[in-house]
Length: 65
Image 1 (cartoon, helix red, strand yellow):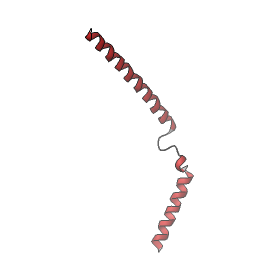
Image 2 (spheres, one colour):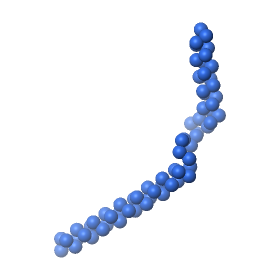
Image 3 (cartoon, one colour):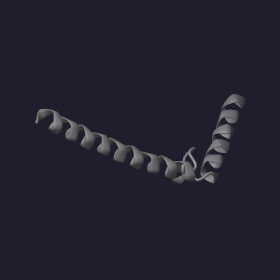
């Protein structure tokens, strides 16, 4: 019985701490500035891939002529 009370108390404390930290609305572990940097890096990666693809197409066209 004592163990059950301890488990319930720990669960209640955990729930209170979870709610105090924002619960489901929290940003997560990664800070906002890092998330913004990751989005920028994804954009740069996309543009590099597109540029490489265009360059490959140009090379293919020159070699097929």
